[in-house]
Image (cartoon, rainbow, N blue to C red; front, side, top):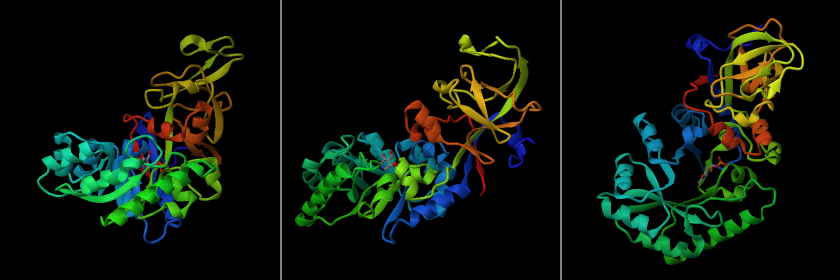
Length: 381
Ligand SMILES: Cc1ncc(COP(=O)(O)O)c(C=O)c1O
């Protein structure tokens, strides 16, 4: 039987879509909360359209389920959430420095990250009312942030400026997913030293935070006042060894429909370049999803899909909007049946990590790769 019992209504007309499983999201939040003490807040990282899951619905849902903060990368991402009526504090991770950006941030009550004295000065000059800001320190990631050696000077400078209220001081870890804690320990030691220095100058300590998903799951000593969790919320593990620490369920599933079925004789080439040539007659099924939807073309001839709870090999080059599979094992397959690209079908499952491992990348890149033209469909509400 076609495995589409759970797909209803207008979805029947879609050729491909992303399902966002809110029961799985709730499960992940519950599991994460068991790792947090009552004094640590949960910030949900919903940048990049909530890692491809659809930021708006995701943000509303995580706030209802216990997250108290949100983070985005860019100002437009934050504005989108505000326009939808979300009133929770929103931290923007990206660097912002122009007067226009400062005014837009203030107008939408977003909370910027400041990394340099120049940025702080630009904000202070243009604002006419106090704005909560977050100071980012580089303790070893070598990305955004004031270098740890100059951190005290930077914090002092911002503290002395009008209209800037330091809401938090934070840093980002480069290797929290590594089983070897040496680099994380070094970064934390630098962070701790700066905190002590700030305390000794009499500047009141704001909120402090350091942990991403991996740090949240590896050491409560890294939690401080708030943890910034992205990947684990979405049910993905920062590394294999976290599977023994927490049980997570993938939130995102990608499905598409069979759009045509045909028999092809032995010797027939399939798709651009005829990279695949049928060795024997086979039943070819065309599936309505391609690389413009976020299925990496590099997976051509290297991936399977699930149809009727069976693994079915993909054949030929993946094209922009469509891909082909060898569905000979399902002789009575019909057009319109549901194909699972990522997710579960019966006891079979294909994970973002399966794709990532095959491609030599990380699951973050896979889930962020699903494009806007795939509707995000909430399930298990
Ligand atoms: C500054 C910062 N904090 C937290 C996170 C969340 O990381 P993760 O998805 O590994 O939890 C990110 C994501 O890249 C980030 O850039």
